[in-house]
Amino acid sequence: MYYHPLTSPFKFYTMHRDRALSAWQVLIDAWLDGVDRQRGVQAEAAKHFCATQMDSVRTLFETTDMADFTARLVACADPAPLKIVEISARLGEIAADTQRQILASLGLHVLELNTLVARSDASLDDPPRKSVKGGLATRRRQRMA
Image (cartoon, helix red, strand yellow):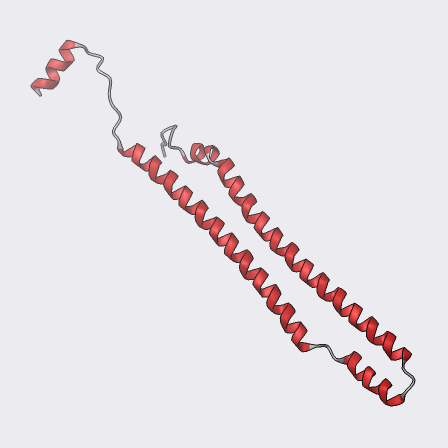
């Protein structure tokens, strides 16, 4: 299959390689930012959980009354389900925000590529102009035909 040198797929892709690379970098940056934000939320949750458990254990050892000891022991075992739901919701928000950023970046990249393809198609639709090499005799033959 023959491709004109200016319109070959290889030429098109090599000309726009930097554009594709920058688009992939934007996507990867958005994804890594989302992963980092989720890691931060998880680290904060683990830190808070450990601090709460340490406070509960500390107060547990400071008690001398058996009723108070039992109440604090039960309080240590409570996993705080609402806190888990809150953390899950925050992680879900981060994931949704990351997906929105990635989709927006992909949408811009696709629009840019469509524009480039439309421009290259429009330039292909214009017929190339032939130069007149025959001089006056060629022009006379063209008029007579």
